[in-house]
Amino acid sequence: MSGTAAAEVDDAGLRAEHDALAASLAARASIDHARRGAYLGFATLLTTGFAVRLGFDRWLSTRATRFRGPPVFCYLAAALAIVLLAVTLVEVVRARRLMRAEDARFARLKELRRQLELDP
Image (cartoon, rainbow, N blue to C red; front, top):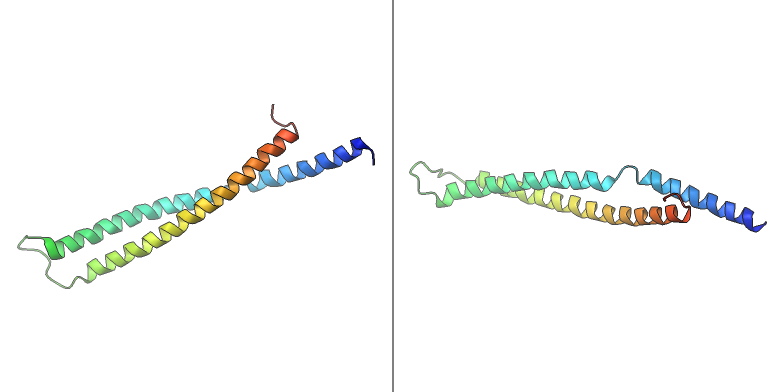
């Protein structure tokens, strides 16, 4: 095989790798997980505030009409907030892990584009 033919085979392999990387980076799954984590974080914040307010009304309020029943709703809201916090952390960690992998693939894609002279 001559030098030109070997270079063309190498360029074809690089081009195939480039196309495969471009296709895998077309949709970034990490963004979906980051969005889901943001929504869950907001829900966690609301639920935590609700649990704190229920606890305040149950134990610290000085109003005459304060709630004097069992604190079951406060405990349920706190448990839900803890579950939402755990799920939020899972989504954020998953998004960060996927972002690191996508950044590495994108760096490889840029290197391939430079080698193939696709970018000016």
